[in-house]
Amino acid sequence: MNEESEPVDGRKARGHRRRAEIIDATLAIVMRDGAAGVTHRTVAKQAGITTSLSTYYFATLDDLLVAALSSVADAYTARIHQIVAGPGDKLRGLAELIAESGGPGRARALAERELSTLAARRPALAPVARRWRENVAELAATLTDDPEAIAALVAASDGLCTAILIDNAPADSDYVHRILARAIHAPQDAVPS
Amino acid sequence: MNEESEPVDGRKARGHRRRAEIIDATLAIVMRDGAAGVTHRTVAKQAGITTSLSTYYFATLDDLLVAALSSVADAYTARIHQIVAGPGDKLRGLAELIAESGGPGRARALAERELSTLAARRPALAPVARRWRENVAELAATLTDDPEAIAALVAASDGLCTAILIDNAPADSDYVHRILARAIHAPQDAVPS
DNA sequence: GTACTAGTTGTACTATCGTTCAAAAAACAC
DNA sequence: GTGTTTTTTGAACGATAGTACAACTAGTAC
Image 1 (cartoon, chains in turn purple, red, blue, orange):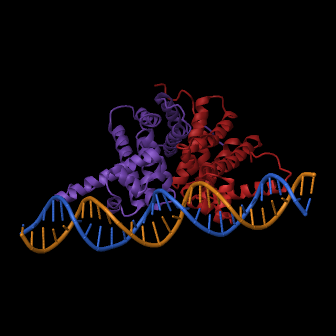
Image 2: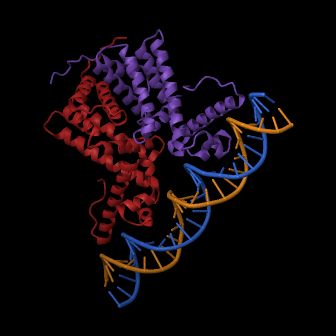
Image 3: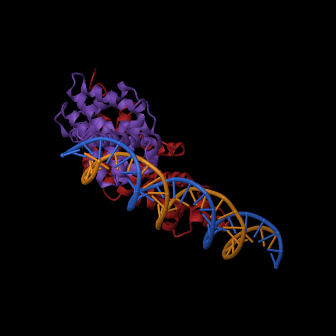
């Protein structure tokens, strides 16, 4: 998504398409078997290419993981920007996005979590892993000026995702929305202590 | 921690000690290199034993990971029960526990997150991974009866941990406490919509 | 002492891993 | 057509993985 403009060379064009295919194959692996299942060989088999071609585009496995995480992060970034720019209730839009983690978006959300967790140890992944939370903060900033309310909403979003993914908590959009609203609309002097 | 009572047989006693050593070694590996670094060989080397002895106590790698996750989960359970049973402000105690993830408790918290993430794919790990959130909910239940307030506090706790671990967010105990208080003390009719 | 059980070791098998490399194939420029 | 660049292949290297297994040691019971 953050690639250069279309190349005129037909070979490079094919190369870019191939690269995207490999990233998609990597994501498919992460969604099916987790990040631990990502090897040059499994990715190549998934993409229907030879192992060496996978290493041709991504010299190291880390490169592959960075690209894959960037891809999911891009998707979420687009979704949130769409919500922010759209006409509807932004908090409800976020709630629906989060609630998807319990259904059709579960594999994708899980992939994002796995790759983000990797980021704690691989510096190359860190800036990409931060994006989801930055995007939520951006959305929150359109609803309030209180920085702690923003932080509270970001934390609530992450915590709800965790609960839905790991705990198999109910992913009811209305329920998620109520928890989110509670986080962002709480009075800042709730507890004077 | 959830083992049987002390065996009288000196060999079995040694065996139990050995088992605990292996679990500790596994945790050390997870803390240093992540869950991906856990192999029978690395664990054995860390524990100063042979590879076959590691497989003698834990036939499969999953067994090892379950035991390791159980161990960290036990530690957190003990900490939270201590806070609940103690005389001090329970919410502040939780805030301090969470804030530790930014400092001395970082490796341990990261290990818990990594193993919990594994739980999404390995059923054997699931019940153990749920414990942390159940414990926080237990603590929250001593502060309010509103189930959504409890859920909000649990989500906030998890989200704050994520921010501290992945985002390298400031882990100021007072700050964490304010976010937590905001989650649990918000009025339930903040947003009528 | 013998018989028995639990812990421990060394070795080895097969599989898969990341990575490299020279060479072939394809698309381009001329 | 020739020459050049990019993509693609097949094979191979060394390293490490999980696991199995027979043998050895050490504690226990009698």
